[in-house]
Length: 370
Image (cartoon, rainbow, N blue to C red; front, side, top):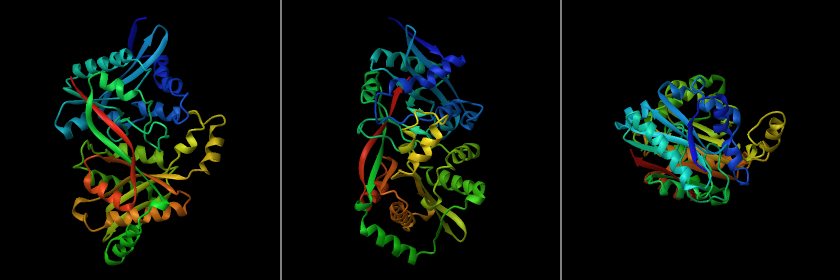
């Protein structure tokens, strides 16, 4: 039966786009259904400030009356400006295990991006380089941590059969409290005694002020990383607001010198351990389930840890790591994931090894010329 790729225009088509993964992946015990309300908000230009500097088109593909795949083609003007290249993005790819279906989606997204003047496509980004990234290429039997992706084992082959090649691998590292290096803890204590840096937790009563500090540090500390695109004020506050309900301030650190923020780290309880039981809905019973299973969370994810360039090599990052791995188990999180880490970030990988962590998942960003 012939395939038909359809640009999403109607409410019904948008619902098909959003709900497809819930049908495709429900047979996998490790898949964590995202909250449908959050997916809708992410894709809504009226609610997601990412679309103040980006545009895109959603597509679904049908075989007969059945939707069998989806993809989004995305142009992020801020990313293009930073990279100095006409690189289009794509994301939200999901499909049945059929190279013909995948090719139809990839080729349609390619055509749309080419018509927008793009020379190369990179992804998946859902929807931006500051959101959920990549294709899981191993450890398919393990559930994803909060704000990380999961996909069936056949996805990498669909990309490669369609002519995509690796652009960059992103690593996730795992640590159990029994793995923590004594050397790390001792180094953290020694540096704290010898340095003029003050370490504190965020002041949630002055949340907006703290968010401004974090964004300033983030946009400077990560500016030389591969794939970096700066957060706008509206984007950063939008994301921070969505995470405020799950943040444990004891797991967030701000490093200051003379009252100026020079680094920060953000570690989140892995709320995915509760969301996996909700099937994407908070109502009518999802909220009760969320509150119940949230009490059983035993893993956290170090999402961000960075220091301004001029203050590096002073051990500030070591102290924040040491404090995190010390407090985490005390708060009920004996397991910790550090993600994601660029495969070419040698200083960070060296630090993770010193801590006692080990790599256990790899996510791949793919690219293809247009």
